[in-house]
Image (tube, rainbow, N blue to C red; front, side, top):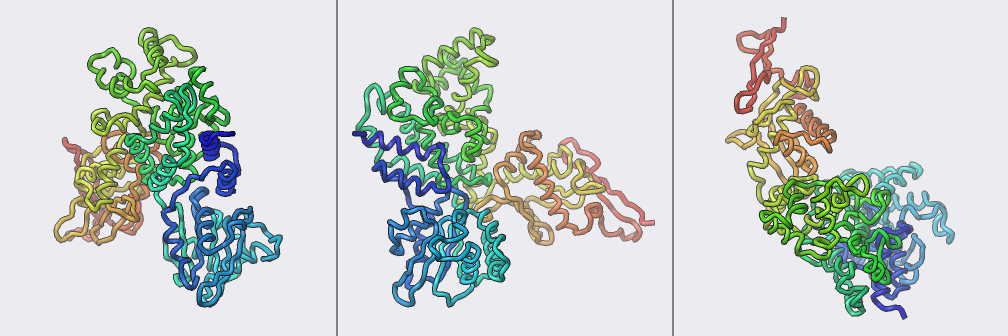
Length: 627
């Protein structure tokens, strides 16, 4: 008889990056769990109580649309509502995507339509409940605006498919009205038809860090892991040398968890959303990943072979978290690994970090850090394989098995490990975030996002640093000014590389009796750089992680080429918005001032002609005759 631990691991692989029909993922997992006799990984969705509250009333009056990306939990929530309304579990277990239920709890009975997957809804219903898909959606559109209708819809659809499908519905008046409402709700705008009977939930608005916390807790606390400890084999599965056990226990450590959570927070602050399905995929891959296993995920029976072949190191959690066990094509096709891969962890480093890895075991000045970070980890760090390759590299760095020395390839995995091993109290000293492309990510979390969430202000130093970066892009000059925002343009257009025609100076700090200032605030739970202009007009720039990193590096005097073009264009667009607000005339006229008192035929311009010894711009007043 198959042991409980084997059934759990076999079932857990279903969450990993294996071939399957993603459109029926929820149904697939439920059926697989039932066959295996295992409980699925589950937790209460952050929006579940709000949703159930809508249906826990005497009279159902609101239609509900659940949208978001694939894997956000739409089908699961539909199932929870179906169950709460007293729907048949057997009917829900079928592959049907359209269900109906007569709901009666006092008052008038209500017919509830449930479409749990708009894309999979067939054009014609084999049971004759609707004639065509378009006709059913037109009917939904109609009752959306009919307060007397004795029926409601619960609809689940991916955001792009929702809009695209409604655009294809024949242009009846109700369908057009419904499309306008859906588009407005997706943009978080109350928009038209505020009286529509609609509760609209965009599940992609749930923070990835929240999804990660819930998913990780459910993953780590699943009863299947206790079965693994019960069935542990001293020389095999879940024994002391088993990589599955080691990876599971590493995920349980507070430091690994907090570092991984930081990456998800930064994804949120970089406009990258990780759905539940992908987070669970990441966790399953992190624990079970091995490039030589079937589907690149380990099974219980694989462990003895892995140990006998000496390939345990290929299962490293630190590498699996970035999809190193997968083929490049597979890794690039899965957005969760693409998101984490954008941090460049393992490929970025510092001289000090590499010196610790290469020379730390022999150098007295480095040995303390080596022993703490590498020497103490005999599982994935200070292994016989690592020490042998290290010694060979130090003695004969030119000896390569291919284009690169084997030890150089090992460094990538070791740097990834260091990202999850460096203690918080050593993070600043060892420049933890220099192991990432986003060297300012730690500062962004600790000194921008966290203070704002706690109702505190961002420090004057950081705002000034960002303003210096803006000024250097706005003017095209290496200015040091950080107390004023320089709005400058070129003679022909505002996007000129060198903009030396000064339109205005905006004080960074608020001054008594004046509206102008530059600040960082929360807008819809997201940091935003706001410029308050003299006429009280406000223009804002969404300060995501990439823009923050770009501006801080420019403020330091560097132009980071790996993401500069997109950011540069974003900042120039922000500059144009500011110039338009200051003077709505053509950019070439933006610096035009009122005629001087003694010569009504002259125009006065301020040119940024040079920089003083401190890097502050010196503006020269130029008068141009109208004659």
